Length: 67
Image (cartoon, rainbow, N blue to C red; front, top):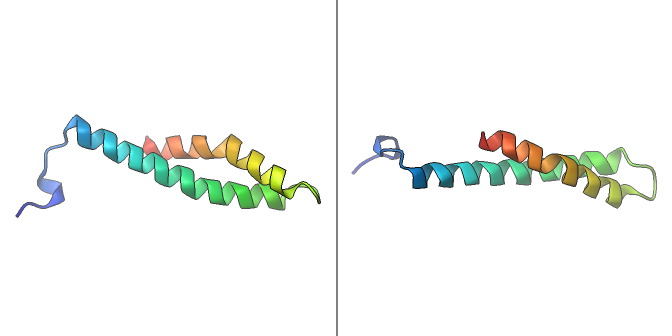
């Protein structure tokens, strides 16, 4: 039986790992930036502030995780 560390990195596996890392970073940062955006928004605009925080920051953080 071979362990996952003994396998050779092929392009297929590298792309899959990169996609998984982007997904984890995007989901985790979406939650964090939504809460932070909603907390720092004026009263009555919490949902819009949270959504704006996610749209601005989640792809950036997800890309950093993928790199």
